[in-house]
Image 1 (spheres, helix red, strand yellow):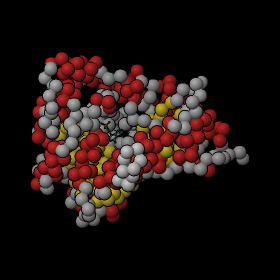
Image 2 (image 1 turned 45 degrees about the vertical axis):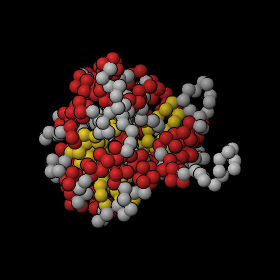
Image 3 (image 1 turned 90 degrees about the vertical axis):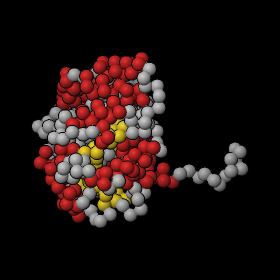
Image 4 (image 1 turned 60 degrees about the horizontal axis):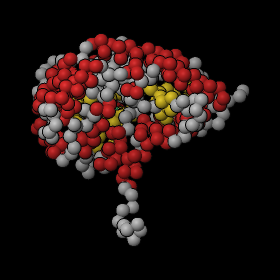
Length: 418
Ligand SMILES: Cc1ncc(COP(=O)(O)O)c(C=O)c1O
């Protein structure tokens, strides 16, 4: 006995250690622990996906009022049904139907505690001893972490930087076998800032159809685009291949703390119902926690009343920040950017460590950058690409300029002397 507990029963959960070792939060915590602590250099976070702390990214008053109205109505103090309340599901079905050619029903919509919870639900539902799932590399590591925890085999297909980070569809075909259940795409892309064209998404759908698998489309950055490609929802191709769309209000409304997301079956042919995936999602939600009813109660007002000028303002800030980021990073010789970001909040850049004196790899670069310059940037290895970096540009412009300037100073200090 030690501290009144039996010694041998709990030795730490090894599966959790493995799942957390590949999480973004784990890596960012490690970098934050290495910050210089120099009061003259306030830390600059260029590794996160949450701009809500910056005044210029404050959400719209319409969304704030919707929450206040929901609280004051006293209608949403109750437990919610496991799949979510009907008015919220109806509003989400209507919101997503605007951009596709068929009508979604509230029965297609399952509410979740943010898109991370959507990922948890779907990976848990799909996990079975022989099954495998195809994930993009680089990607959003919550998929890997949840799959590791649920013992679902993962196979990676590549995104090709020289082709605007499009999916290498040949590698998808080569990886799939009779046990593959689904492939995941993230569009607009995290970590690449890419936006897929209509034609490319159609090819993704056709490839998945050929392989007999469905597509999980992570569209948490829906409509956050500022390049030449408009946002095209994968659900448009639902009659070619069944699509599970994952989303939330976290990014478009810049309220990730409100924790409201969804899983939507975009499946006009009813295949997901026939294959009992929809039923399994319901069963999973019966045994898990629901998003707060009051946020669900606010959803119709948020989705229906937010004015375009709010979205336009946010996109303008992101677009200008992406330009600043791309231009400043280009001035740093050890960094190359194969593709200018066109959406989401991130850019992936390649790090040439051979131009640096005493830097081993991307992790070493990010650790020393945190320690010496109090700038946090995510090492590429955390999203599947060693010796790359993921830089967030969704930051107050003056802070972004300062952060990029410090990265340049860091390069000047560490560059290899000729
Ligand atoms: C690709 C991707 N999916 C899902 C999420 C999680 O979204 P949420 O904040 O709604 O849980 C994120 C958050 O950064 C993300 O980048």
